[in-house]
Each structure stands twice: as C-alpha cells, then as structure tokens.
Length: 168
Image (cartoon, rainbow, N blue to C red):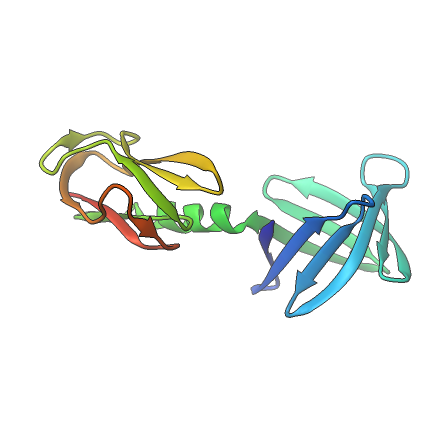
C-alpha cells in the first residue's frame, strides 16, 4: 500500500507491503528495508525493528496526526494513503464556485456512467462507477448543479487526477 507521510512541511512517499513472515517491506526514496513493529506495553509503546536496528517508539494518534517519540525526539506526522490524499485535494478544490470538474482520485476503469448531460444533480449524487484494484467506487457530485460535460465514456481507462465529469 502506498502512503504519503507529511512532517515539517515535507512529503515523503512510502510503500508498505506485508511479508509472509509477519514483517513488512518498507520502501521510500528508492531504498527498501524490512520492518517489524510490535506492541511493547500500553497502548502507545512499541518495539520497532528496522533491518538489524531496534528502537523503542511511542506513537499517539490525535485526530488525523500521529505524535511519534523516537530516541528523545518528538515529531508530528500526517499519514494518508495516496487515495485519501487525492480525495482530500479534490474535496478542497470543490469549494470553488462556478463549473467544477470532478476528477479521478485513483487510476481505474469507468464501469458505468450514472448521469446524462443536462441532468440536475445534488451534492453527493453518484455520477459514475470507477473500478480500481478490483473494487467499484462511486464517484459523487461535489455540489448541486447541472451536468454540463461527460468527459469519459464507459469502459475508458483513466489515470489519477484525470477529469471525469463537469458540474455547473
């Protein structure tokens, strides 16, 4: 699974994949390491093994952030999957007035278009079904308005951030 970790106004892409032995392959900036994280007492204390190095780590979650204590340092992180980050960016852009272009928050295939051009929609109305990673995701209207443009066809493959529908 791919994540975006943000701290001190810096974003880092991290990919975390489970291994058969219960540990994790972690890749960031082209470097990979084997990691193991185990509870070490209480709800926020953990033992972290990175390669051959062991650390005691405290992790406290507050709302959408994590406060991590490691080797006398205390840092605050925000961790989002790539899909969560893209959805947040799309949601932030949907506050604009005027025509709004609904964009794909992940690569996938358009399975079904649920609206027609000229159709009135309300905020939250399903516009189309996007299949990604063998899951069907309803893409919904960010606001009330009229569908003024269908920018994809059923069966089309779309990339991350690609325009799908315009609502005005």
